[in-house]
Length: 333
Image 1 (cartoon, one colour):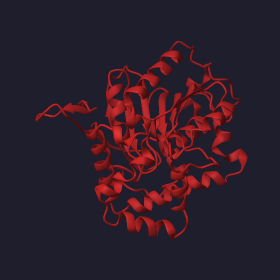
Image 2 (tube, rainbow, N blue to C red; image 1 turned 30 degrees about the vertical axis):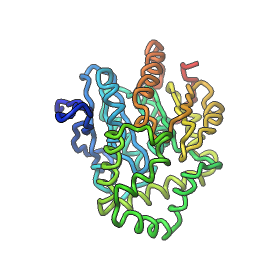
Image 3 (cartoon, rainbow, N blue to C red; image 1 turned 90 degrees about the vertical axis):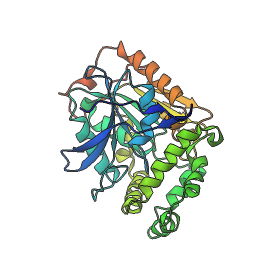
Image 4 (cartoon, one colour; image 1 turned 60 degrees about the vertical axis):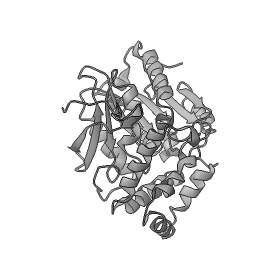
């Protein structure tokens, strides 16, 4: 594997830090689709962590958190097909992405610590539910599970799922994307955008601009968004919440008090659905906690994984396990 370079480096001109992405390369999955994967390596013997981004995001969303954890975990962050540096595949749906992430996890020789944000959180729930043999622990940051009381940002986003309307909106907004247009999205993504580090915010804006300028960006975004909205319409026993009940690995869910896309009131449902899960609320944080407060999220991840590290491995870590077996409780109180 290529040697990893630190993702946050000192600027040679002054004390301001300049942010660069972790090294990456293309991987062809058993699904036949190609993904670009970035890695922050801590050595082959380090625990493996795989991080799944959300709708409109990319592996670079995890750059700062990967920097915080680079000495402790062998971290891998794939760009879902059509996002970031992964080419479009023609199948930009939740179901296809679940198959892609499961196929990617199969390339490791042991179960991994799986982290997911937003749509990536929902995908991670479905992977952990269907393939418990692949997932050692599950960490969810503002997972985009179905909610019927939507924050204003989610309401605005859902409007774009309407046929033709989404194409019209994105055609007007993304036809000539500007930094100012993307910066206006900050209140939807961050709890305290005025307090963001300028370098970190500029990095996020430039990454977003680079992707929306790609010719396939609008179609991929709408395909994935419409599939995500479709998860709300599934009958109870096929819903993501029903799948969450079958997750058997230790789980931590992070909800955020100023999240304009996933309401923090979801904490109550998580406590009902997975009563042994660790549910954490970050009061002054928005939708992308790992970008807004990477040190805080890193501390939560460390504490969570430390607490489960002494637990005896259960059947969720055994490759022989098959989907659909009865759900034991997670070893977390």
